[in-house]
Length: 312
Image (tube, rainbow, N blue to C red; front, side):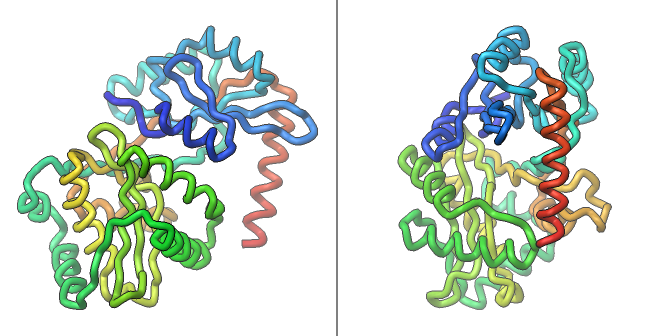
């Protein structure tokens, strides 16, 4: 299995260029986040492969970096597999405990796009195929361009969506750095949908090896009846195939696809109807180096998120 996108040198380089400290201990990549007042660091390590962690070397490096704890957020191992049991044993035998909080979604949806186009679209939900034709009849157009103008449109649609759904997005400089970094490596696809000249939907894909990761997107809800997202995904699949991509990772999904109360439910159903397969990640773990500072940090984080949720 190839490492997940966020466990690659490219991703680490991008984070450092943006201004987030990212480092590694052999094949394990993680970022360092300074804790105010304490003058110590919290380490964040998402989608790690636990079978490649050298815990002895990692702990030594964490202590050298004055780290209070490292969070292994949703390791890149799927539930209900032999590897899941073995991965849990690795974490627990190295003094890791279940994390208090997850940052990444608990599951994802993979879509095999290595087949020919007719076979791919045949496996779409009937409603998705119908909606693609609706979008075409409305003369919606999809572009693949990473110019400053297109990035601006992408960010505008991100802001619209975040305001509607009440979540916080990263600053525009983050997306500009991300898109420009991966564009130079020909590893970025920015798909924008237009009605005439007005941008109404946009998705960002980052490519690594033969996998494309859908990371961010946005849509103007006033045009949802035109079904731009359905056309966007289909046209993006065609474009990704031209670039040699075989798998599309939709990146985030609810753990239970039948739980209508889950905040990921609606988008998860939209994604799974493209004919993909649902995979659930094992739980997140924390490795604590400094328990006093760690407990203090967790209390502060809970307070911070409580305040943020109150003002949304």
